[in-house]
Length: 277
Ligand code: HPA
Image 1 (cartoon, rainbow, N blue to C red):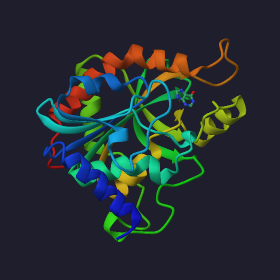
Image 2 (image 1 turned 45 degrees about the horizontal axis):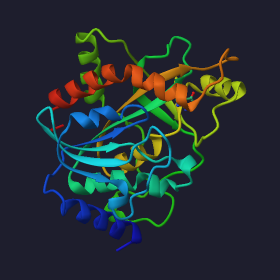
Image 3 (image 1 turned 90 degrees about the vertical axis):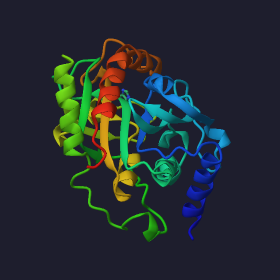
Image 4 (image 1 turned 60 degrees about the horizontal axis):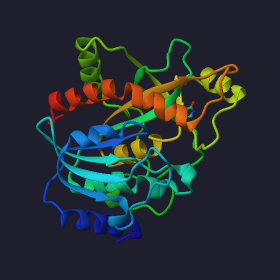
């Protein structure tokens, strides 16, 4: 067995010692979007440092806890906070929690993040459904020794984001009277924000939003055959020269402001999601 697989199994075993709950849905709650975890009827809440091999977050606004319980009639496992490449973790380390949530039983991943809007129609405070992504992080979580038990060596990435789940999110947004944008997310390693020249390049490439997460986790989830839905909280719009400098505090505050809408959308998606496919 590979080191990676034994790490996954040790982490999953430590979690199973705390709860027998077998999750159906995995949630990753991004920057400023962690409050949904507090609405889970929790059977167990484990700080990341209590789980062997789990990377620990170091960034403010990213509390690191894994919560297992019930939400809207479904069994869920939620990451309240995630780690990022810019913290110095490898892409393999960043994505270990997704592999563990899959090992626990989750077949569907709902991921979220804070992102900068590149599409000129986007406004700060918008929610965006990911329809595709560009991996511009400079790395890939599948680099390294291959373990066929975890999925194919060369997984297809042509249909990353599940059309049925995306359609459900769009219908719910419409019924709730919420604007839900959709578009292509480009991931960078960070932690510096983008230059105007980089944003202009990303726009020409077809990117609608930019952020520092999600893509490694989604690659791994798809390698393992999970269905994926992902939503960006557009916390700021970029391009050209800003009047005010972009700050992490500003990004977190903007995410917090739209968080109630994000929670309303995701709760209903979880409730109405069919797990058979
Ligand atoms: N760039 C990268 N990541 C981000 C941004 C941004 O403008 N906003 C929130 N996360």
